Image (cartoon, rainbow, N blue to C red; front, side, top):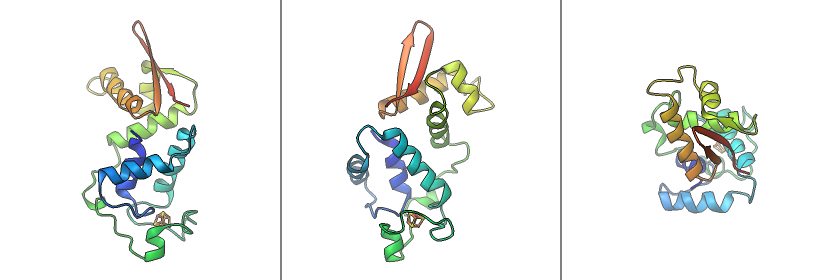
Length: 159
Ligand code: SF4
């Protein structure tokens, strides 16, 4: 549930959340605005991508969270899990983000239409079965809706 947020909280400094799965889950649930999961997830990912990366760019990027940020207030910018995190490039997390971003541009896409839009090497080991598993995880997290009719599997953002 709220996996994108939990992953984000695990990596970030902004909310001063203890390094604990239950704590991440609780904070993610409390902060997610009702019926705004798409906008919220995009905003959180944008914050991580533009300002709050491995080396935070608080003032340079004009981070809008500075007023409330635990790390900015305390000066402690350590993020315990960051050094051991696998590279974002090519990661499952990156492809999850791409699915959400791509579906934001379309009402609904069949897997065969979605796959090539999120990776240039779509096919083989990273083909339909791989994508089906990825969108199933996103559906389990309440982020997308999966509509299966015969051989067609259509995916859309969950509102
Ligand atoms: S103020 Fe700095 S540490 Fe806090 S969320 Fe923004 S970029 Fe990250």
